[in-house]
Amino acid sequence: MTPIFLLLVLSMIHSLNPGAKMNIHEFVFTQLTNYIVPLVDKKLHNVTIDNYTKKIPFFEVNFTNAYYTLDPIRTDQVVISYKNKSTKLDVKAYAIEGQVAFDIDYDLSKIKDHIHCDAYLKYMYIDSTITNEVSKSGSPEVKVAATLHMEPLRAQLVFTGGTTAKLLEILEPIIRVFLVEATDISINFHLHKWIADEINGILSTFMVDFKITDKLNVSYELPSVSTYWNDSLEVPLSGYVYTVGKKVPPTNTPYPIPNYDESMKHTVQFLISDYLLNSALKQSYDDNILNISFSYNIISPIEMNLSCNASKIPQVILQDPNPLANLSFFCNISAYNKTDQSTTEFEAFGYLTFTIEYILNPESVKFYIYQVQIKDLEFKKPPEYDVNWFIQGSNDIALYVAQLINFSYLSYTIPFPVMNHTTPVEYEGKLYNHNLGIFSNITFQ
Image 1: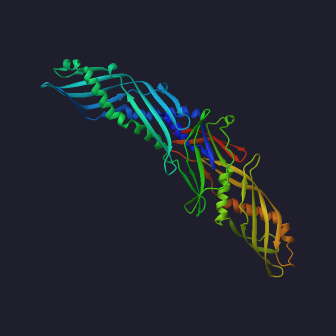
Image 2: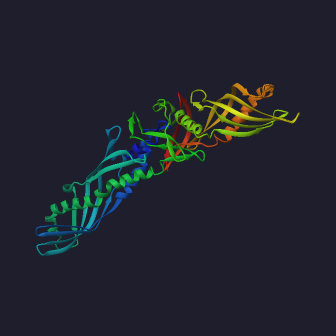
């Protein structure tokens, strides 16, 4: 009944713009069907009906000890149609069967009796409308309108136990109407909530707020409604940078995010763009956390203490075949010459270019630098001071800095948005223009 409702919402983990995008393929419908239908069936399998009293002229009836037992809903009984390809879909479950048992205490013109009734129900159906919305906090939210329809004229009622059971057969049309009313009160009043709770429960761990440093966080949020594209469902997400709890949306416009890449033969596509990476770098630069201090004593006979910082906002470009990055820098350097025991203070300026690799971990991606070059070195130094030794060793120094960056700033991973009850498997990566595509299959636990 609700498997595909869930998919529409599940896909809310998909389209990170500026951060990344996750796209869920039609194949996931089957998994969700097998997962969610039993959960809803469990709710409907044995429903207790509240005590119900109805009075009409000359007749009063009380239903007590009533409960439904509905047969399991098969997936081939479920029909889905998209009412609005961005926000709504209709789901109908047909040919539902079951039975309801209840006791009847009635008073008919001073004739009183206690009768048991078993009603055998066929041709019931459930229709639902599912709406995807976004709460004020930016988290996904599903709202459901759902009704179980009973065909009173097609129900078979069997009365037993009392001396006047035959009399109730005469009043059977009225009993049928009362039964429908009791069903509305006991099931239809709650049905929408049961479905919505199952779906929203799976999304309860959706939000990702990931700490990078003591000052900097990256958060994924859902800013708008979902859309339907070919055989997959898409919901836009946003990746925001936070600094000390304050959201800092980037100012520039992100590059377009590719559509689902069917050539990769996976059910889930997650794309992370360099827009999110660069927005994090921008905020890191603005908050002056892109600094590093270290000692370097490999160039004999010089021992150095260096304090370096970015002089411009660093940039990352995700491209095929290799992602690239550049970092303009300046360093304050204290160089001690062990030969003449002199210390000289000077400054070095330039920029580093990096080649970046990525490693796919379960539910996250990690970047690291594996090639580096230093370019356009300039110095602010005493006129007589010779820095050729620094220039000759600059590439080795740059490699050392790259490793420091790997072990400090790149020691964390960027997580994918997460949900309950899912396990991603079989990761594979692919580079696009300004985006890294990460593909996997997901299974439901």
